[in-house]
Amino acid sequence: MFYNILLVVHVINALLLIVIVLLQTGKGSEVGFAFGAGAANTMFGAGGSKTFITKATIFVAVLFMVTSLTLALMQSRRSGQYSGVLDSVKQQQSVPAADQVPASAPVSETK
Image (cartoon, rainbow, N blue to C red; front, side, top):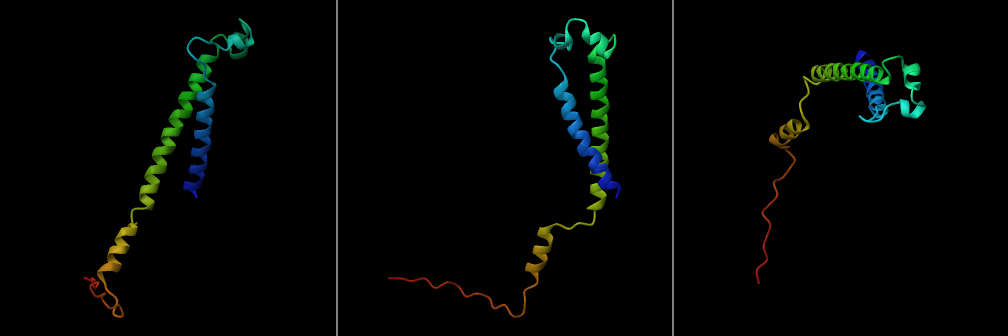
């Protein structure tokens, strides 16, 4: 139950991280270009948009890392008793069935 909830939070967080990274502007362009020269100060406060987006990116990135590590640890504990597919194939091959007859060597035709 907790694993499924954490998985949903992780997927939503990943999508949010993608959106926040795409919203970030390049080094030379500011949000002020889109709204006019001083509009960025009134919309996001005196610091502009850079501090808000930077803080949001850091928060979402840290949350993404925490959920990733937690999911990895939970999954490793879930699959601790798992024996791989190849292990079961090796067990089947090592015990021959009584009704199986070994195949004879192929006959080669000579002319």
